[in-house]
Image (cartoon, rainbow, N blue to C red; front, side):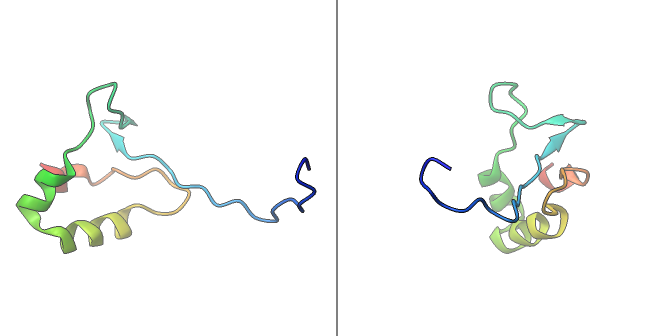
Length: 68
């Protein structure tokens, strides 16, 4: 448009992580401390969890018991 570039044919969007059915947010105070999760479980299990349950275009967090 303004830059005289063609418009994208596909737009890929990620979802939100949900905590108790609402979007995780620092301002709401319901954000998860990932450093604590890494300390408790390790970085590789955290990566696996995020890849397995963080589907592209879908909201995640249905299995947030991992972070407790």
